[in-house]
Image 1: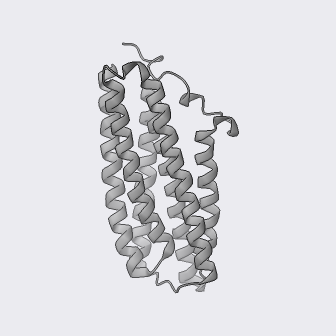
Image 2 (image 1 turned 30 degrees about the horizontal axis):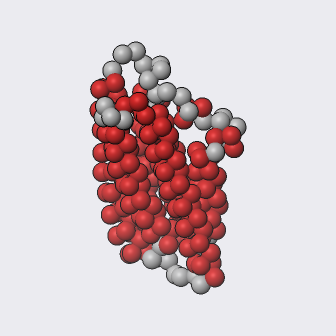
Length: 217
């Protein structure tokens, strides 16, 4: 069962990398065409998420190595914290970029194709988040659950960007920077909750337990 669990985690890691890389490419293109800070930030976030995917794979490879097998829980916990730090860093980055854009606003050029790309991006991220969360719960992997939370954050960012784009198209009011700040604050909060579980109402107990305790060998 341990071997099967490990293969599932590694497979999820590769899927995580592939999807986020493709989303980053699409968002970079759309962000450049529309001159949207929010979309560009989302693209950077997707590229950073690819790093999280590599962390998932590396941590699992170390965990199944006989030399490190006794430190599986610690390795997963450390990796979870690293991913959480990435979440916080990206959140702060988005806040800084958004404030700069409020002080010196730039014109955006949203169009129907941009809306379609945003819808597809949002749906893809949501499905990936659900997959990671369900898989993480099934095999009791804190790393996958943390990655699912990170991906769900991305989904909400995409929803906010989509909402901003629709508002702009209808009323020609650019609110994306303000929406991005609100979402970024939520991202930072969730990231801190993974680092300091006691900050969360749910205390994220799954991050502390042995992932193999509930799995029969």
